[in-house]
Length: 198
Image (cartoon, rainbow, N blue to C red; front, side, top):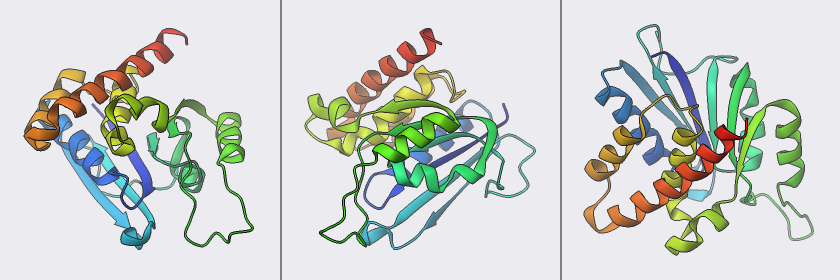
């Protein structure tokens, strides 16, 4: 398989764990994988971008501009910020729920709606609401695994769901495994429904 996947969000959303699960799952399936993170002030809610390159052809762990097949965005404005990295036919999975940047003043509002509308006008998109999806699990912290389910269910990820489930069991601490597996399954159903309706 050859696929370049970008994962973006802000510090604390679990983007790095998501990229590690993707990379390890792809390697488990026998693929060559290169990965890297670019982190900007992540401890303060700054942007975090992970690059996962699957296949023999990748000469660098960083995806070049115009090279990504799939963008998994944990935050709407971060999705827009990283659009330049996508191929023209790339697929975007984006969280509808915004995270207000630390630079925002009290008089300014940011709800992410304009960014979502722009993404939908530019790309094929699957919009996922992390609050709604993760409500049964008691925390939006499970979104990083749930969105992997959506990516697998949509058939855009190119990695078997079973490979990802196995990797969740191997990587995630045992006390969190049950909820993470349930979150993955819930996300998978959303992705599968999207795929069936296309």
